[in-house]
Each structure stands twice: as C-alpha cells, then as structure tokens.
Image (cartoon, rainbow, N blue to C red; front, side):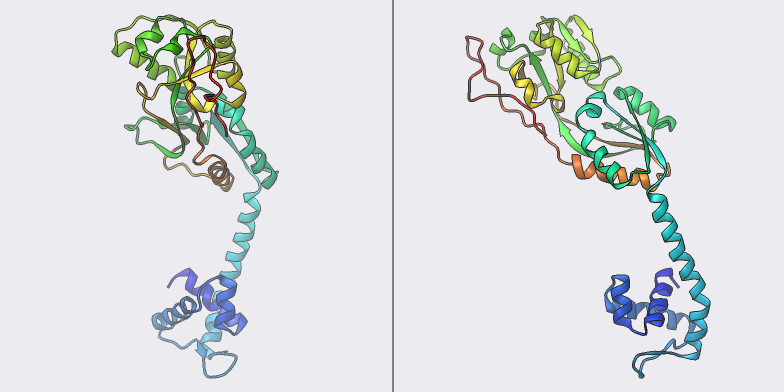
Length: 319
C-alpha cells in the first residue's frame, strides 16, 4: 500500500467520480483506477459499487474512508504548512566578488520578489575561501568553479563555461603577437588575482611549467579595479572572460588564451548530504533560470600596426 493510492481513493470517495479525482490530482484516469485496484487487491475487499452512478462506497469502502480521512487531511495540512515555510527562513550564499557585482543582482532581485520574507546573506570570497566555507557549513551554497575532483564531500552543479583571456591597454605591443606565449606575457608587469583564487593558481602553474620568471605588481580579487590599472598601463592581466563587459572595449584590448588554458566552469557548490531547505532549493532554481548557459561573447580584437583597433573587430562580453 502506498500513500498515493490512499490519496487517490480518498478523492474518488469524496467526489464520487474517478475522472473528477484524476483531474483534481492531475493524474491520468487509468492511474487512479490502478491505485484503487491495488488497494482492493491488497486488502481483499471491494471499495466501490461501480454499477450505480455516481459510484457508491461499499460498507467496507465506507469504513476504509473513515480510517484514511484523518491521514489525508493531515497530509494536506502538512503541505499547507510547508508551503508557508517555503516563503520564510534564511540562508547564506558565497560567490566570487565579480559574480556578486555583475551576475547575481538579477537573480537575487527575482528571488526576493517571489519570496520577500526569506532572508539571504551574501559573502564575496575567493575560490579557496569559498570551498572552505562550504565544507565548514558556514555557507549553504557557493557560486564558484568546480571543487577538486578528489574531494567526495562536495557536490557541484554546472551553470556555465568560461575561458581565460589576456587584457592590456589598447596600444600594447603584445597585441602584435599571435599567438601570445606565456613567456611573452611574463616579460611585462603582471596584475593578478589573489593567491587564493583559482585563476591565479592556473596562471602560476603554467609559468612554473615553463620555468619563467615573472613580476606581480598588483594582486586583488576585484577585477573591476584590475581593469582600471591595466587601462592606465600599470601592467597586463590574465582574467576570466565572464568578468568582461561591453563598456570595457573602449579602454582595453582582449586576447584569447584558449591555446594556453582550457575552458572551465562556474556552478553551484554544496556540501554533500547537507539538508537544504526550500529557500535554498528555490534560490538554486532561480540561479539556473538566470545563469544556465551564460556565455561571454568575445570577438577577436585585431589590432593593426598603428596600435588602433580595427572597426570590424571589437572584444566585448555581454550577458
């Protein structure tokens, strides 16, 4: 005996109609009929006199109806209470600073319009810090790159892919090289994310593989500030393409580095086995609605020998 079979019986008995009960439950009529037959077979009784119209409960069916009514009504009350709690509660979300700045405002605004009484706290951290916060339970979910594959304590649901790019001032001499080698970039002052960031680790690993010396003149996790210092010529930077936006093409040149760094992804990282309330699950669904399949559209930025971008080639990222 299954709960859904009891619920089907209850509504058929109350409405005196299999078809009406099926519509009420949003099930097919054959499914409801199957539920009734299973109950009758399990208990060896006949629940309905199907000759009379509308169908009538037998004496055994009437007794069964009396017994299951409190159960079904309790379930309905439970559903009502859980639907109420869905619109309340609190949780903590962690994300990269750049995602907090550019990619979360829209889904958060949408979520808050749907669930105004749910309290959300948002923290902006680098990759290593976010992974640790998820593992310690201090955040309920993190919007970041995939966790290490050898860590079974974490779960990851991908939202979108991203690529690594080089950004320079528009007249930089590196724009004359195709492709740009890691050794070429190491000759110039580098502006990188903090050592805790995944992008910084990827860049430095590539530099170590080539046994290249390099000079980091500025490190921070705010890509907007990084872009500002690149634009004034303090150095060049290696960043993720999802941090670029249409307004950047007026002050920056962008070079794809697909030949050096494989694409990676951003998604939702959670602690395996941790219970997530309806608020967290609803927010994850809202993130998926807004961010799944996001792509930073980068067109090749081709620069002529005079240092001026050609009109047919602009590098931008749009959402």
